[in-house]
Image (cartoon, rainbow, N blue to C red; front, side, top):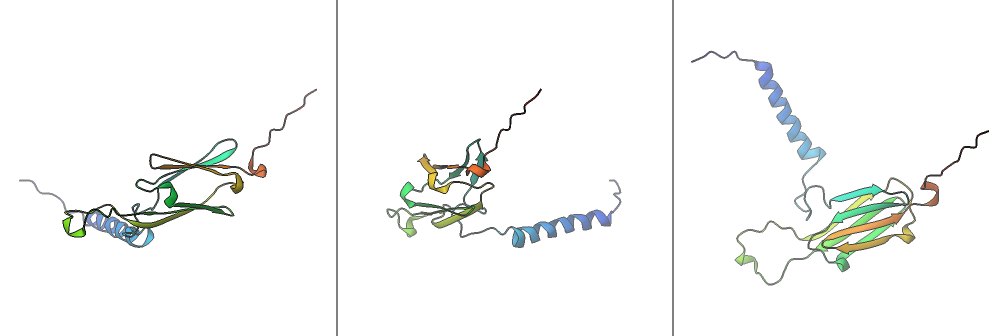
Length: 147
C-alpha cells in the first residue's frame, strides 16, 4: 500500500471545470428539448463558390412541400415541420426518440446575394440552396499593365 499526497488545488480545479461546464450547458448553450433537430436545430453547411453561396441542410423525414425558405436582407431562414405517422397509437410505443413538430433556423449570410435568382433542390433528405452573389460581392479582377 502506498501513500498518496493530497493536492487540494487539483480537486478544486476539477470542481471549477465541472461548474463551468454546467453553467455553459445550462445558460450559454441550452439544449432544446423542443427542437426536432437536436440542440442546434437544423444542421447547415454554408460555403462559397466564385459566383454563389451554397447552403446544404439535412432535413430527414421532411417533404419538400413542408419546407419554407426565405431571404430577408442578409438573413436566410429555413422553416419546416416533421409530422408523426398516424398508423401507430401512443399506447403501442416502447420508445419514442424521434421528434416531431415545427422547426426553424436563421443564419446571416456572409456576402450580399441576389435572392430572386436563388435555386433550391431537394434530394434524399438533403436541401441544397444555390444563391448567386450580388455583383458588388463578386471579386473583381484587375489586370496590371507593364512597360
